[in-house]
Length: 388
Image 1 (cartoon, rainbow, N blue to C red):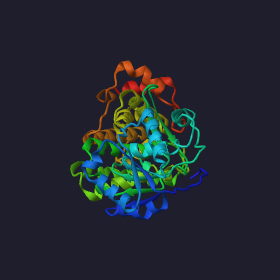
Image 2: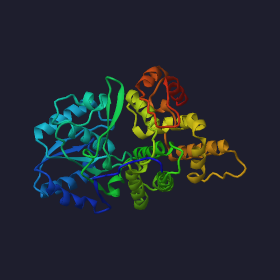
Image 3: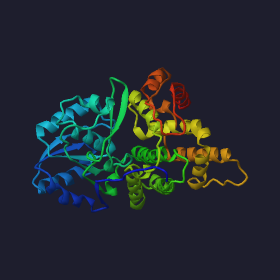
Image 4: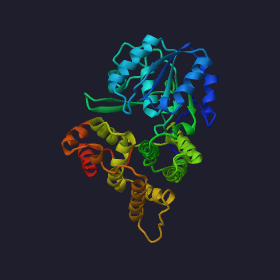
């Protein structure tokens, strides 16, 4: 490992079937007013809402609600949440849901006590919080983003056709996260496999960079093998506790900043996918799946050795008698077959993208510089065209 780094992660995790009991330990640390943030109401159908509210009441909390957080939280919804948190004089924001709900809660937490427009301050100017931050806790009901143990927050602005993530410092990380794999069992299969690919993409964004012998790469290969194994089981039996628990734990470690240490990182698949989502409002993991194979084929010549390693160590490609390039491409072919078998969307047309959107999507794509090739507009256009 050649990089210099500091590693710290302040989020406390409660994992397993009894994880919700952790709320009884955490809630006394915060004031009386709790803003309960959640999505479209599925937590009321599956009983999670009642369980959480019961614990909040038992701890003497006054509950305020901010419901209706959408899968791609918008700047308009963020402004609404800020006003709700202000009216509640929230001492704690408790996000009950998946990554979008957790992301949204963090964006609200850094904005309530600031006078600036939240979108401009954090997602255009990329400033850090300059005011009091309301603490956030998460009760996870969907896995994929890793938002339960990081400072990431992604917000969509439909008017500007932009979907942008801001990775805040550890002062914005959730103070605690409740992780019961059983809470994910009722998730529709489409959302489950979308989350699974989001996890894979997070790992690959960090894996496909650098050329040194890095411990983080060995960790990521193990995480990928575990994810692939458990995903195959969960696709057949969504209530297999062991598989779903492994997927949940892998999601957390994929993006709690550990495996990025000592490395440069790529993130262009996310930039491309988020540009697609800004124009289609498609599900996040599916936008990543739809652009991934075209992107990886495009950059493979610039990082052939790593792609060949990936093929052998993750997908069990037999290297005997083959060139490095042949091994690398075979790895992507095996990966693509697995993605199709899992049920992932493999082109952006299925997500609602049209050729008329191409220019706009190109302009909406931010450029990152940590991968094997730094993209220009021509590169972006070529990959997006290949994704139709």
